[in-house]
Image 1 (cartoon, rainbow, N blue to C red):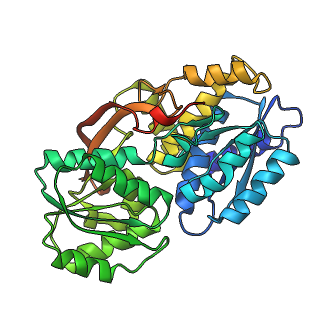
Image 2: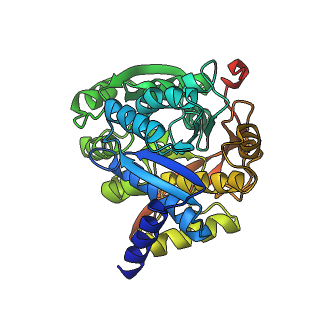
Length: 376
């Protein structure tokens, strides 16, 4: 508790500094469904700022409540009234599509710690938009590649009906060599999957790929385990992050999922991050926390070279990505999205803890197909 109070004090100090050299606006989801994702991004980001002792960075944090209209209002306030230099924090792709283009059009840099919609990776890219997590399709492409390696031939696939959900199924289908037993777009925020599970049961599928982040994934996994359907599941890390596994428990054991990060990636930065995050917050970090941490350290590395007011120099410093990532080697592709390894992970039990361990590299130095369409 003392450590948490000390960190809260440090965050308040950073967030209210009177004479900061760089002002950052963080809009993320801190309440309602999906709040755990935004909290992890925030906590990872602020841990990096606090550890670096950067009193020259002021961070203004607001809750978007997972509502696009609120996110837009907060963005306008931060840019026009608060005069932020850099924006970050958004979790959901529909919110990113509402905020990012308007932010970059006003000369503000946007560093995404999560959402990576395809529309912002190709023709809709912008020189001031950097994604530090992944392009949305990537982890789903890796799931399709893993399904091939596992000799699955007929997958039933489902995801929510919003930009990231569409990117998810597109990504899986791009690399999966088999046939589809069914394809469903569910409602965003849906919690009852009885009808979908009945369709899966009757479909003749030999595998199920699903992308259901946050509370959606918790509901689906519990209901799927209770249904008695024994068709193997494959998914991206978004449905198997540490917060979800804590809520789902043993029902997730044995499921293979794909991620660009895990707590057992073997490098000094990751080991130190996992230890310090756990000590500070009293919980294991998720991939969202690692992305927030990496985003802050990328920002720090760029600020050490140039102020965002010197846009060309600051942009070049961001592109250089001269920081130690929790993922090990880190580089941006030509469209300022990561080129990175993506792993297959298995849900296992370590003592009483349900968690993930890396099985193998599924895609090595993987970029995205949209980069060729990015011309600025």
